[in-house]
Image (cartoon, rainbow, N blue to C red; front, side, top):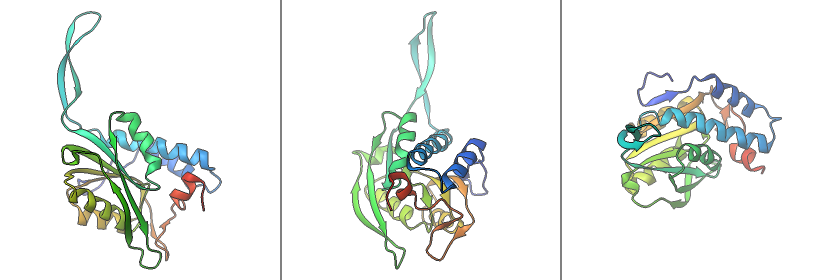
Amino acid sequence: MSNENKNIMICDHPLIKHKITMLRNKETGTNEFRSIVEEIAMLIGYEALRDLDLEYVDVQTPIETASCPVIAGKKQAIVPILRAGLGMVGGLLKLMPTAKVGHIGLYRDEETFEPQEYYCKLPSSIDQRKIFVVDPMLATGGSAIAAIDFIKKYGGKDITFLCVIAAPVGLEKLAEAHPDVKIYVGNLDRGLNEKAYIVPGLGDAGDRIFGTK
């Protein structure tokens, strides 16, 4: 991981870089694309979970009673930004099988590029949970900012954002709007084109995950 801002972590693991290259290839089919997104989510999630608190419990091993570490503190919640964010949920659930899953539905106005909300359903006691907001793409930053705004409105405080690729402008805007949120990025791409798509990017993540156009 590396970045000057302590709350922004750009992944430098070779496996993540390799798998993102596979996603970029336009010949990668829906099934493989979906599987790779899930794998990348798990790899990024592994890094994002590094600071989980531990507590010690007594465990009876076949040899003796030992004081052993277990995850402590807040319960986890995974909140994908619909619809592409759904592709990352499976990978994180493999790491946190007891986590609750919420959903935030946003769509991008094709003229203004601004996010519009159409659905928000969060787990109970969201204010007591460690929350992981996920979306494969961080382009303009609008959707991520809006999603985190909604979560904070409902009481969420301990929030981490995970994405596969990001554009510098979106990353900067998200960090500025929510300086308390930790951000994990699989790869920082060059920028945005005139349609506000990430370049070189990987196309429309939602369409490629679900096989739609």
